[in-house]
Length: 386
Image (cartoon, rainbow, N blue to C red; front, side):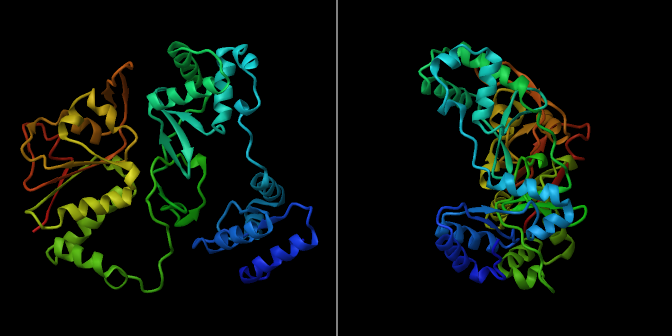
C-alpha cells in the first residue's frame, strides 16, 4: 500500500507504483470531492499508470466511508468499485442457446444486458433506465427496436409479436419504480437532502427522475445573489419591479421547478408585454430542470389523451403564447392536482398515469378559462412582469 499525502503528488506516485510493479493491478482509492478535483486528479493518475479508480460511496475519503459504514461495508464498496463491468450475455451466447430459452429466460438475459438498470412504473407500462444518476423513460418503440437488435445480433428469428411478448414479460420481472423522495434535489454531481442539508453521491435507490444540469457547490461565507450572481440579480430585480416580496415569489417559482415540486398542486403563468423578461424566466426554468427534462406543448396537448403521450418523462412543461385559448382546463386541473390522467398513445393500449411535471405558461395576457368551480383559480399562480 502506498499513500499520497496530497493529490498534488498522486500522479508521480502512481507512475512510480507502475515502475515498481509492472505486472500488478493498481487501484487508486481516491477522494470523492464535492468540487470534483479529487476525481479528476485520480482519473489522470489512473490513465498514467493504467490503473483503476475506486471512489468512496460518500463525499470525502475512504476513512469517512469506514467511519460511517464500518470495515465490512467499506471493503465491499472497494471491491464493487474495482470490479470490471459485467459482460453482456449476448456477447457469449449462441443463437441455439437463446432460441431454446423460454420467454421469461429471454427477458432475464435482456435485463442482464442492460446491467439490471431497468425499472417499470407503478402502472406496469413505462420502462425506465438508470443512467448518470437519473431514471430516464425509454420510448416504447425505441426499446422494442433495441430488443429486436439483440435478436439480430445472435441471428435469432423474431417477429413483432415475439419482441412484444419478451418486453411484456420483462415488465413483470424487473423492479417497480418508486416515487422519488420529495426532500431530494438532484444535481449532476450528487443529491441534496433538503431535510438535513447533507449531500450524497447518486444512487439508483434515490429513484430520481430529473436532475438539475449544474454541479452543487456549498455556499461561501457571506454569499448573496446580489454580490455573487449580479446579472441574475439585475434581471430578478427588474422583473419584480424592485419589490422584495415579488422577488421572493419569483424565486419560489424557480425553486418549484428546480425541486420538481409538482406536489404543490399549482401551475405557473408568467404574463407581461414583450421584452419584459418572460422568455428569460422560461429559459432559467429550463436550465434548472435540465434541457432533457423540459418540453414545450399547448394546452390542447394537456387536454387530449392521445397527445398527452408526448408529455410522459418530463419534469417541466412549457406552454408558450396560450392566452387565446378558452376552455375549462380539465386536463390541466387533473395534472396539477396530482390525479391520474388517461394516455392513449398510437399503436398501444390506453392506460392511466400520473404526469409529475411543473407546468409553466408564458403569455402576454392571462389565459381565459370557462371553469367556475374554482379548480383552476386555486391552482393558478400569475406572475406579471412589468
